[in-house]
Length: 67
Image 1 (cartoon, helix red, strand yellow):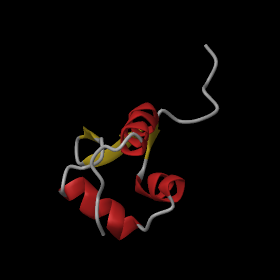
Image 2 (image 1 turned 120 degrees about the horizontal axis):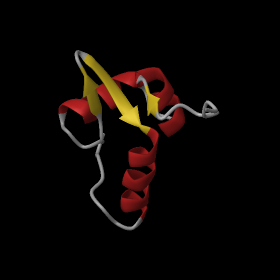
Image 3 (image 1 turned 120 degrees about the vertical axis):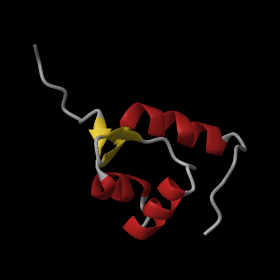
Image 4 (image 1 turned 180 degrees about the horizontal axis):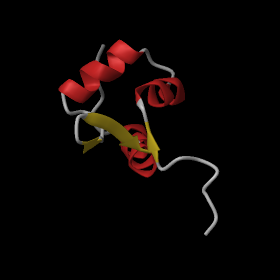
């Protein structure tokens, strides 16, 4: 089995960097439940594929997170 070149689940730092936002902004989005997450015990991870779909929805005029 080959390993993927990009991880399926991203952590806070990876997701904030990918979205070009600060970690505190990302944390607010998680608390407000405006971004897709997966909880693994106490860990929060961000599925790369779900983030892609979420961003496409924003681009098409979906809900936005005002800062």
